[in-house]
Image (cartoon, rainbow, N blue to C red):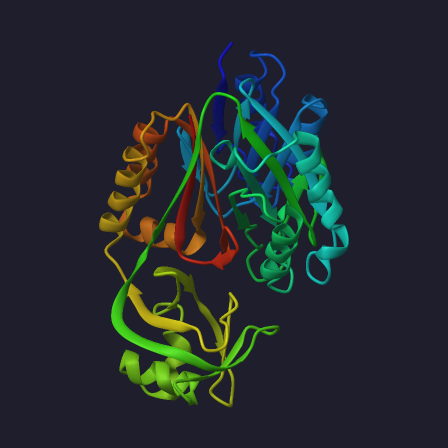
Length: 377
């Protein structure tokens, strides 16, 4: 029996078509009952795939999210279905945080119960990880991360995940657990690797310009920054970018900021500019936090650094799971390196699948324009 199998199909291009599911199920079904299935698909057929996955694997933990690009060691496509099934060598426990856009903390016991079920101790942080997918409602990721932080207490349980991809022209996205589809929830699975370590790596796709500043007037709840270095936020960024304030709204996605904590840069992308020159970000920027203006890096260089980090983890992965920003895949598509990039990951990370959504989560940070990968020994 194979420990894990990745399966991919891009045949279903219209709503209601199930050719991709048929292809994926045929690949996964001949190896026994999986302990865990992680899947992603295009938005339109997500609910169909979710129900069919649970119907075929009723005794497995089946977790998934809508994705802008479905990619794996088997291929990539904006349409269709990608899945990774793990058949041995892990233990896992799953759950749901409801009302993720408002008060997921009410459901913190869902995470605590999963931790208790696995009997996690403080000595095994290199064998444990939490994978979560969050429906992108009201940019709720910080609320979800606070809930996980409260639940795990002093336990060092590494967390990584993604905000699900939204349907074009809307703010609605889908996540799923064991056949149930949600648009205002976070679904998660905590995984223990019985065969060795789990290593999580990350790589920013934007580089520092060396232009540093500080957030000096912030509303964290609305993720709004009113001032950098005591100047209106948009005016200050405009001066650093070299444009006029009225047009900075055009440039804030191309020039995100890097929040600096413990010498690590976490990317935050501007969403909109207010009439008062405030900027609403997709991630929380905290008052009196240090930041740096970022700029686009060469896609080939960032992809190369990411693949090199996989080579340096110190073991050969038996399987991996990747998270990437949808914005990055747009850049990779424009430069024609998507196919090369996904193949390079497979050469180093082994069997893998990946998702592409609106934001990424790593530890206690909600970030963007970042590549993540969890490798399982």
